Amino acid sequence: MNDTSTESLYAAAEKIYPREIDGTFARLRNLSMIALLGLYYGFAWLQWDGRQALLFDLPARKFYVFGLVLWPQDFFFLSWLLIIAALALFFFTALGGRLWCGYACPQTVWTSAFLWMERIAEGPGAKRRKLDKAPMSATKLRRKAVKQLLWISFSLWTGFTFVGYFTPIRELGLKVTDLSLGGWETFWVFFYGFATYGNAGFMREQVCKYMCPYARFQSAMFDRNSLVIAYDEKRGEPRGSRRRDADPRAAQLGDCIDCQMCVQVCPTGIDIRKGLQYECIACAACIDACDSVMDKMSYPRGLVRYTTQQAIDGNQSRILRPRIFVYGTLLVFLSAGLLAALAMRSPIELDVIRDRNALYRESRPGYIENVFTLRVINKDTVDHTYSVSVAGLPTITLDTGDLVEVPSGELVPVAARVLIEDGVVAGGGHDIEFTLSATDGSELTTTERGRFFTP
Amino acid sequence: MDDPVRDAGTEEDRHELKPRQADYFIVGWISFLAASLGTMLLFAWIDPQMLAEVAEPPLAMSRMTGYAVGFFFLWALCLLAGALCVYLIRTQHEQTPNDTDQS
Image 1 (cartoon, rainbow over the protein chains, first blue to last red):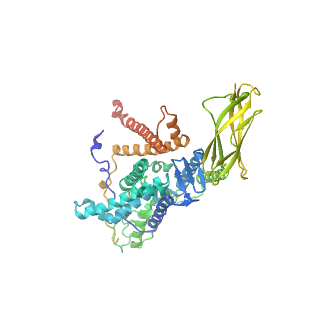
Image 2: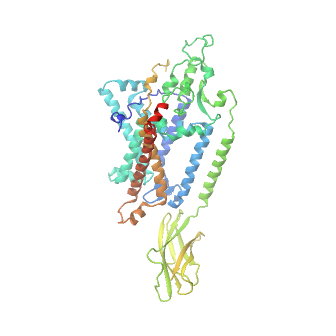
Image 3: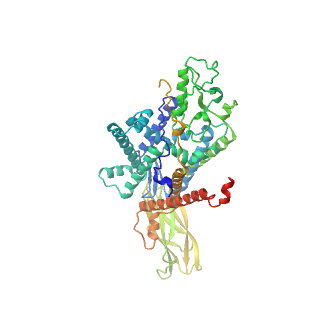
């Protein structure tokens, strides 16, 4: 180990106490935070067709997404969805800059929630700084204890909800109340709770600064027409303090009064006036701060604003540009393709597995027998009954019960003994076809190949 | 907010993580993300219960245990790879003393 291992890993980073600010973007950000947290905590409890609407049932290896039941065989859809999500991120980054970071990233959302709880327990930024510097006292202890209590309960609730997306949350809730939670369930609740606590309570903006890959490579999706938050240097400089009624032109000053408000509200602790920096998560707190100061000085708003590099240089910004077309077209095609593929997805699936023990048997005199296991999967939302037939060789017959009943979302294994008369085909392997047809009038049918061996 | 208060953090206030400290977090976090993705891809195709059954001798292991073991195994592997990468990058000039004088 090296010399830093002896000190706290967090010690070197001075804690940032962002000052609270009200304004248009602060309200937008709060709205987005409440909506996203509401979705996360609420969706786990939503029911659909008598079961959890969103459940990635890992113990049963089945995913329920509203009316859809996805099997491991459908993993392809999930990868497709992830590609669409990545492309959407590219598209919105090219168009709107780091909107994701400022309004939607879980790191931002949970950090805001933790800051909000911190504010309830310890008061606003300046007060928290004072409290942290003060020696330990009964008040300090009480405030810190309240904060930790809020944080820990919220983290555990987050962990519980997270696990609730993977095992049914209602059962999980009952298990918590009668203290019969399983080992792994308990472990993951605490693991995810701890991750939430660490990332949102302590790491905060350092996750964005040091640990986030997107923050580093988003510049590749940027161009001079992407929306950024910038300080209007031409208008602001030379900066300097002045009396409220002074004429800045007479004093040869720009509009920036150098009040440092934009720096104080910044959750990552940067100075937006130094230009675009990769630490900037585009939360727009500095816009709100600067606008409120401009109002007080009776200057026009927008010294710090959402703009583009083009506009700052005095050119016209272009929204429609090749990059946007390419990302946009790909996005539309991939989304339409996914919807079409999901709509056309066959609700039945048949897997043919050969018996591992023997290639063939001469079970009855004059007959060759091969044994298969047919795995019949019903991905539909209703139960189905199927008949199984086999074809591909002369005299081929199937010695199996006639009908297979498969409830919705279930897999039923069927032992299938396939027989042909001895001597009707040459020795070796032969392709045969199993056909599964629904007998309940739903006209579902599927065919799967198998291999039949003769001596 | 009457008058803009001048107690903003000074430059010295806003220290960065030291490079060594940042290394630990970067390696830990990125390997966590990679292991999560790997776990998803791996177990989409392979049922851990099936692995347990075909193991010699067969293991009495539930699916949840299988997923967890798989995830931590991948995380450990990614941590090792990441840590070695950082170590080699950070020490490459120390290994060749002739280089250090020139830069």
